[in-house]
Image (tube, rainbow, N blue to C red; front, side, top):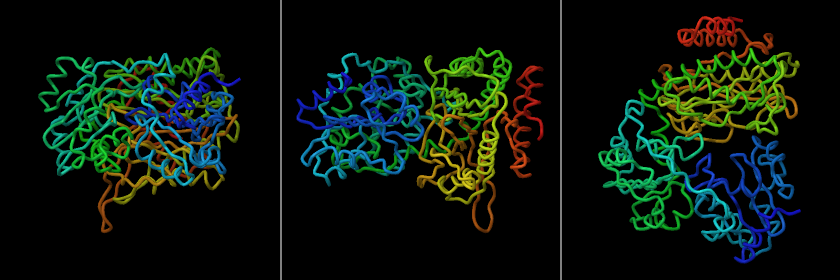
Amino acid sequence: MESMKLQAVRNFLKEASLDAVIVVDSDPHGSEYLPEHWKVREWLSGFTGSAGTLVVTMHKAALWTDSRYFLQAASQLLPEVELMKEGVPDTPEITEWLGCQLQCGSKVAIDAQVTSLKRAGEWQAALAQAGIELLPAPEQMWDELWRERPQLPVGPVVIHPVQYSGESCRSKLERIRQQLSSGGIVLSALDEIAWILNLRGSDVHCCPVVMSYLVITQQEALFYCNPEKVSASVMHYLQEEGVQLRPYDCFLHEVGGYNSHTMKLPASSMLAVRERMPDATVVAETPVALMKAVKNRTELEGLRTAQVRDGVAMVRFLRWLEQTVPAGEVTELALDDALLHYRSQQAKFCGISFDTIAGYGAHGAIVHYEATPESASTLLPQGFLLLDSGGHYLDGTTDITRTIALGPLTDEACRDYTWVLKGHINLATAHFPQGTCGTQLDVLARIAMWKEGVTYLHGTGHGVGSYLNVHEGPHQIRMNHVPTPLRPGMVVTNEPGIYRAGKHGVRIENMMVVTEARETDFGKFYRFDIVTLCPIDTRPIVREMMTTDELDWLNGYHQRVYEALAPHLDEEERRWLKEKTQRI
């Protein structure tokens, strides 16, 4: 039986003389995690993953997603929605598929308010070759179809003090104006706005940001945000920093009034903004992205102290896990509650940085698995638990993955674990010249497993914000070409993995800071400083697969972990940590 929601969409398309609609997983700010109000694709398809694009025609529906979500999408999608596996041979592109489904002269709709002009431009060019027109959907389309659509979030705006940010809002604005030289810029990325203004909020799940826009010119800075969210003290702060407050819902009406000839518009901006500023100069990246990615001394010091507290929480959690699993009463869902409990006991804790991924056994092979009451497994004293979690603290954000042996393992599982650990160490110990980008280093994490015909399809590392989004750019470590060079002060994760459907998943993740190593006749060289502090399980390691240098690194890392965390633990906890960090 066809979904009533899909049928309603098709009826709407027919009345609007449209032949298809592309539904992206985005909001007007290109956020990775969406407020409930913008989860149209999820509401329509049933798929809850954070990455996916749904296309609905008059007769078919299909959803494109990447390898992280193949298994999850297959289990969640409505029966009439076909799963399209991105990156897999023979999977057509969205525009290619539409070209086969539609006739020349057909019209395809997109929501201009949540579709980036970059993505819209690519689709428009590809569809035009098939004689298909790409058009903005009627502005009220989803409000009319989704009758119980959630309202926009109304959480309060709070000031992020300079004692944690390390630089005032006024100083950041001045640096941005210097980068622009003349004219101004329109910003819609919520983490960039929060970083510039030294403001935080709770409008996006797991991201301490505020639904807003920011327009910066050489003379003024206008902050578009719901005034109900701004207290008198925050209003005074904004005035002191030279920032004017404007209502959020006035942005699209007012932005067209700026002299667009002098304005810059990021390529990540939404099509609706571009339509109102047709003469603005589109830029691939904002100057803010790189400024934010290179952490200042205060931010780096805060990150390191936050990692100590997070490490203490992880040690207490892992000890609790070891003690409780044998009873057979712990489920995947209980792990999230336990982690929150131990992290919330730490000073300056502000919440989780993303939804915990706790995959036991076969669930560990689902890269971004999220347990539900229906799917949650009970942990048994055997096999692997893959645990990926993180926290927000006033002075830093954390992201850590550990794969834990709960009991006996297969030989295959131990080999996979060791390949992942070797890749992790190989990247962690890299030295590289100035100008190197993450793409050039990605192979270091994969080479050991590649020799065995094994790989993984996700990236190896991403930037992390400073009490901001846990995923940030512009730098990354991944096979896809990301040209941004790694620079001292950048924070990046190291998280290779192996996933065997129906069996297990393995991933080991630490956060690292790019640091100066030395300067030679060949120029400056950088290295990584590991900041995550938590023991890596040594029980699954196949020791004959490890080199002496790799074992020395692991022993050295564990010595650092013990020395950093032991002063903050009680005697029994120190004894447990001593055992887990002993030399091998």
